[in-house]
Image: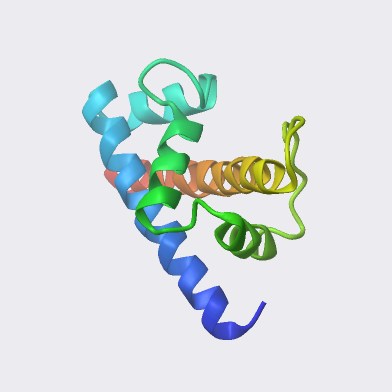
Length: 120
């Protein structure tokens, strides 16, 4: 991945993380409850990580084959599961959602931990 692409991906990830934390806190009440909900079930009630990722990728015009390749290129060393059957485009898109959701989950978890450590 070229440096300018890495910078764009990092911007996307940071923006998504900020938005996701904001939504989690609105749905759960505070940072501690947000972190607990995320850790308990990233797809659970009020968290809906993959749904959020699909919306973010759509908002950033990355919900297509080229967008999937961009996300997968940035996440090339991560293990992913759950692509399922489908066309190459459908599998790439599913893999990109899964890969981005995994990396976003880690980033949000770390960010909330850091924020909580500053509040204690």
